[in-house]
Image (cartoon, rainbow, N blue to C red; front, side):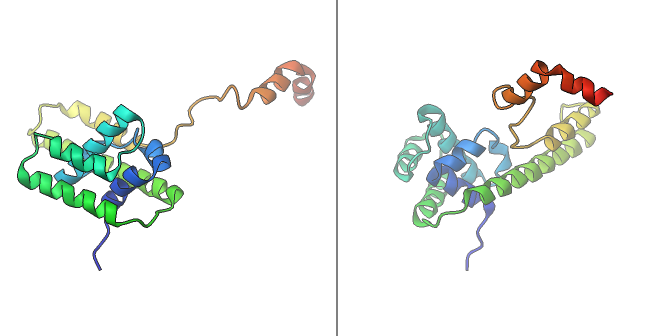
Length: 175
């Protein structure tokens, strides 16, 4: 049996599952994909999504790949093979599980890329200075799909109102 790679499952679900696409596409980066063919397909999906705010169909992907003049015949063939595998695999992957796995994968890839970039800096193969290494690693370690930052003023409005409206409860706690 052929080994299924997470990258291919992510690409498949970017096309087949709109809810998955909306949750993860803001966090995915082209550089996370290690294979150039997967990067090509990912870029086509993102381009389509940015323009139409919904995932592309397999047919739309194939047409866009055919119209992409920057691809040579080998790249086009390999990218089409990936898209064909998407159309043949109709098994649905649980979205919640896949979002968690995609987040872990993005974190792992970001750390790997930051470490490799840091090695290039140390080996003097990069234009960056060694002072940038902590920032590279800090940025990689901060990759997260958590969009919960700060206060939700709408959702917590009742609690805040009670806290402001009934100050005697706060005073009772102090005594």
